[in-house]
Image 1 (cartoon, helix red, strand yellow):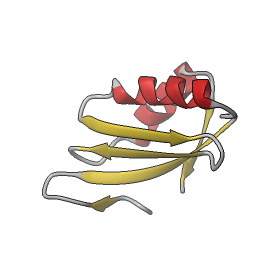
Image 2: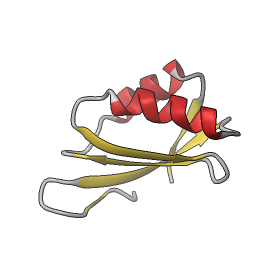
Image 3: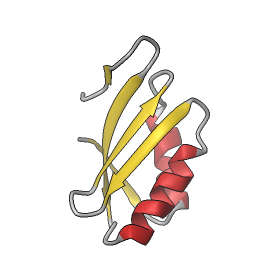
Image 4: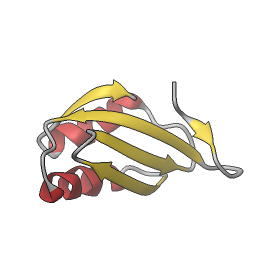
Amino acid sequence: MTAHTDTPGSVTTVYRVSGMSCGHCEGSVSGEISQIAGVTSVKAVASTGEVTVISDAPLDEETVRAAVDEAGFELAGQA
């Protein structure tokens, strides 16, 4: 598991998302995940398929999966 604490009360988790191919894809995924309660930062990179999420506490993977699905992509799990 790649989740780790950067600062007190902050957790960074890297997810793999399949299907992203451009900046618009990155924006769609980032936009949906950023709406999850507790998320403070999202960075999606289409070329690697990785999405780095910083949150106040560990996130429920099913909640992240639902957000990625809403954006039209598939969560492959944690990187």
